[in-house]
Image (cartoon, rainbow, N blue to C red; front, side, top):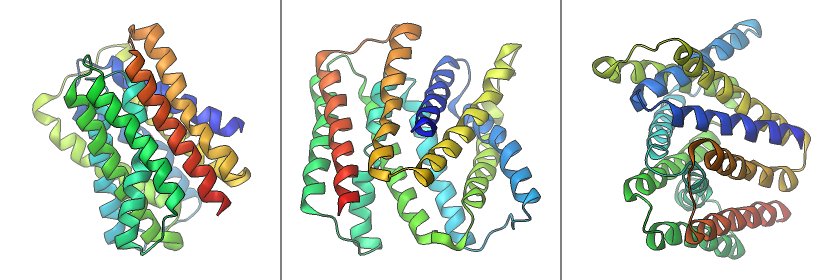
Length: 273
């Protein structure tokens, strides 16, 4: 349980620091987020003598591209809307993953799961349709980010156990570093002082967030541990309120509650099947 709490906190601080970097383009933020993680993934692979190139190379590249698009759009979304809202919308990725799995993996989804997915998606509709203070661009970016996250789930399932998880992450970070670096050439802003520390910390928080989430899943019952990842929503909302003065209307809170409620019930139901 404590591993998932640590993971949620690490993701939260990653979101917070991205939000503070208003003077930098989203591509430069992606570049530093990815570069920072490479200081952990490359040494791990070399130390454990794991092939950096991997086996399912085509799928590894595809997963990395999906991840790059999803991450870029998510970072972009939190520049427009409250962090807690962006995080909540991003978490509807399992709905897209379930839909794609019907076609690409021929998996079955229980009727009860679709009901819970419907509750979660209703939350998104309430956020977009009833909160007049919310910028539509941010909601759209977060939704498309979630869609690509759903494609990531499908691609990782296709990769299966053919490649080590750190190989998968390393591919993602390498491709994101290269493409993010290339796209930021014309808009590069040289960091000053503490900005260097904040930018490089993005990769550290990102790496440990993923690491502890994986550990939590390995040592705990999934239907008990997985819902705790939604603590990220609560942590992010609290810091957003205190640090950035973000506000939430009753409609936004209702929408976020429905998203977290629907997805939590889905996790519990799926694992009991």
